[in-house]
Length: 165
Image (cartoon, rainbow, N blue to C red):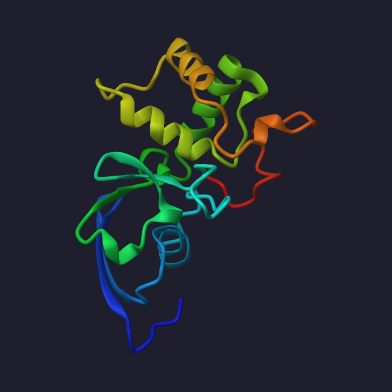
């Protein structure tokens, strides 16, 4: 993302921290989050809003970040999976294990952070979801990126989708 003469100031609150930078007016939120802030849980998938792997919470509502121009949401609050699962905390690993127990190979690593954000956005008590709640959510919301439809077994490892938190 090179700044141009037509750069616009983008001002957001991302995972609780203020972000302000001049960016070209065509930069999408997905690219801003990944390239400027290094938030790799926001996964690039279809770039057309079909797969949902790039889902973030925008002012508390799940949206596909590939469809949002970064400058179109001034002063918005953006939350990615990194806000809930800080690197090194082990929390994402425990949630992945819980998902595997509840849903088996119905989940993949590509859209897992986005699916967890959707699940957490629905939480009302601030507590981690129970195994039954996770299982119900997974069965009610199919894999966002289509990973579960693959012929070979889908694992929770990072080998298939590098860069996913």
